Length: 576
Image (cartoon, rainbow, N blue to C red):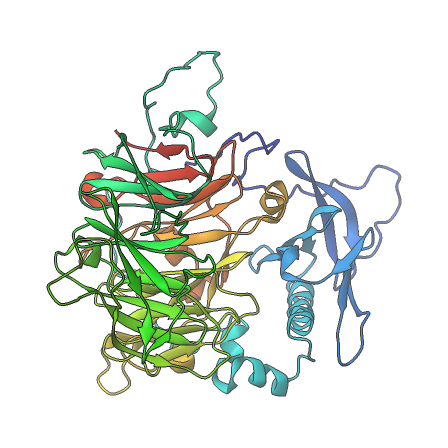
C-alpha cells in the first residue's frame, strides 16, 4: 500500500520501488560475451519511470583530483564523472549488490555488481573517499579516531558492536497496513469532478484555507482543544475534532510587542494546558526575549527577558520540559539553548505569571555554559524530561533528567549538521534530521552490572550502542525534488507511557515523506544487514510544505492522521 502521489512538480510518482531489469541475452551470432570485470557490474540509468540498462559491464573508478591537504575524490562511471559528496545521495543494498546514486546535473544511475566481492570493494573505497572529501583528511585509522573518537570508528562506518541490543518490544498496531489517514474533502467549494482520481489532492482533501497572510512557518498541534498555524506575525487557530479532523476557528492572533511592533517568531511551544504559547524570534534585538501569547485573550501578554547574572542570553531554540508538559497546568519551567549553552528557565514572577504586557526577567533555574565550539542547534525532550541535543557539526548529545552539565552519552557527527531532532516518549529512539537523510539511533543497551536494559540517557552507552540507521530518499526521488533538503523529521506524537510511535514523517520541498516506524525497525535489525532504508510513502502538494506533523492519537484511536501545512497557509488534514 502507498500514498504515491502525482504532484505537479514530478512527472512520475515518488516513493515507488523501482527494480533493475534483467540484462538481455546475447543476440544470435553476436559472438562470445565480453568477460565481466571482477570489480564491475551492470550500469543502469533512470529514465522516465524506470531504470534501463545503460552498459552491461562497467567498472566504477575513484580517483583523487586534489592533494594531501585537500582531497577531492571523483567517481568515474564511464559516461560521466562527478565529485563524491552527500549530494550524490548514494544508497547501497548489500543483499542486492546494488548502489544507486545521483550524478548532479546528469541523472540517476544504479550499478548492480557482478559479485559480492566487487560490491564490497567499491563500497569500502567509496566510504573512504566520502570521508576524505567531507573531513578534508586522509581516511587513516588515526584520522578516523580524531574525527569520530576511538570508540566510534566502527560505529560511524555502520558496524554494530557485538553487544548491540535491538529492543523491538512493540506489538503490531491494529491498522499497521493503513498509511496515515485517508481524508474526505473539507469545505469543498470547487469540486469539479473531472474523473481524475489524483491522490495528490483526494487522499488529503482540499485545504482548510485561512485568510490571506504571510508565509506559514510552523504548525503547533494541540492535544486538547486547539492547534495553531504560525505565519509571519500572526497565529491562526484551528479546532481539534473527534476523528482527527481540524476545523478553521476563524481566529487570527496578531503578534505585537508593547510598542505595537510586529513579532515574527520561528520557534515556539505550547504551555499551561495549551492556554499559552511561548515564542522566539530571530530578529535583531529579539533573540534575548521570549514572548508569551495568551490564547484565550488572543494577544501577547508578556515579554520575558533571558538574562543570567545581569547579562542578556540570546536563545536559538526553546522546547517544553517534557513530551507532555504542554498539557499540564502550572508548569512554569522550560528549556532553551544557544551555540554553547543549555538553560532551564523559570517563567514565574512575584504574584504569578504576568497578566498585563510587561517585561519581567525569566528565572535562571539551572543549566551550563559549555566550551565554545559545541555549536548547539536543536533539542527535544523525552516523556521524563531527558534531553537530546543536535549540533552544527553533527554531534548528538544525550542528557539525563537531573543534570545538564555533562552528557551521559555523546555520538560523533557523520559529517552533516543536525537541523532538527526528535526522540520517542520512552527515550529509546532518536531521529536526527540532516539535509540528505534522517539518522535513526537506538539508545538501548544492556547494563553491564545488572544485565537489565537501559538507555543512553540513563548511563554512558559508548560503542555498545547500535550503529546509526539512515533513512534516505531514493536518488530518483531526490532528483525529482531538485535536491531540496529534508526538514523537521519527527515521530508520531505520544504523550503517555506505554503508547507507541507508529510513523516517522519529514518534509522535502512539496512532499511529505512517511516511514512506517515498525517496518524500519524490523528491516534494519542487526541480522538484516541493512543500514540504509528507502521504503516510504509520499504525499505531494502544489506548493512548498512548511510542516508535516501528526494529529494527537487521542483524536484518532487506532489510526494515525497526517497534517500538512503549506507555506501558502493551506492546511491539509487526513481525518473527519
